Length: 449
Image 1: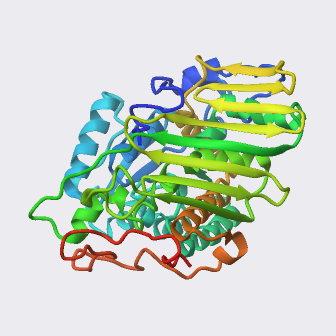
Image 2: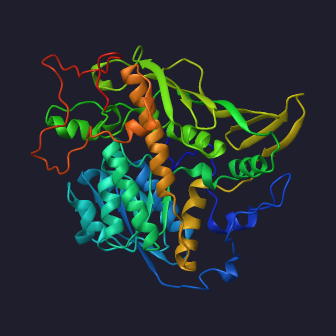
Image 3: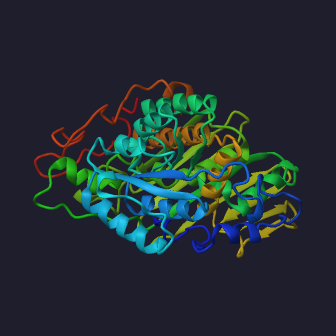
């Protein structure tokens, strides 16, 4: 997975500031659609000029990038606290954030506000108005619940859980956040990206009719592997190599491919009622690849009858593709990178967006969050974030089990991957056998609910 703090897999424009975002936002091709609630700089903060304090929870590459983007998104914010399981990761993050922010004086994290360990997140959040939740996603439900219960506005990365009990916890906290007028943005940044917003606007204008089928992709060569160190406990090794353990990551169908699955849900306007599929591990199948698959293929069926074919792959030297393609009753729509194209069934282009000058959606999501906080608005991404997370989990259930998984049944699952509480003396939730191999899901045998 690419680090959104340094590289954007959609458009690579991390350099856009809040001012360039306002300057560059323009009418979408084929309509007069603007991102809502935009104001010029002279009007910025007119409703609320309070200095907002930010806490960063999770100091890896994604958390570091999100913190920098948040600090650039508003003139009157400061980073006051940081939390991570590991001290070295926190220190490196603080160095990188401070270097990137230069002389802005927005980074004010004294040693006393640098928290390390399993209880670090709550201590950091207590000091802030806005929290950035960017730990491995297994911890997201408990952190989000704590943030909402303590009146914090939230930016949280996707996915928002790795198991169904976690999804239910996020849904409950999402409802409470709305009731308490707390703003929540989830890092499904395509919802803040011009070409996707333009496509959805044209879908609402019935340019290609009703979507009846589609294909969504996240095919790549895979991500990093971190070598086991002799001094590490099993728990620390899994925490450091978190991508390969389902209690922390949820498999790449959830951690990465959720983006494309979420677009399918968004464009169709529904969440699926069932899923069936297949998968396995054929290439990236070493001990250091933990317990996850290296490929998944899932068919999601929606209440309207639409069927979406979903595929994701972590296999080097194979076709790379991160995109979406849908068929409607009148034509097709494709989205990839900064582009969106609609064609009728005669091959005529009825809409096209080429967004080389579009603002960076990873920055826009923070801009919109602070704007809503200052305007007294309520951004409420958490419910969709939870349901798109659930969609991807349902896909994982289907590939791991080989069975048809129904939404209503899956939502009742009590299979909990993440312990309720942990410390460094806790046993790892999963363990290898005597030869160092982790149990791999086996279709037809593995229990997923």
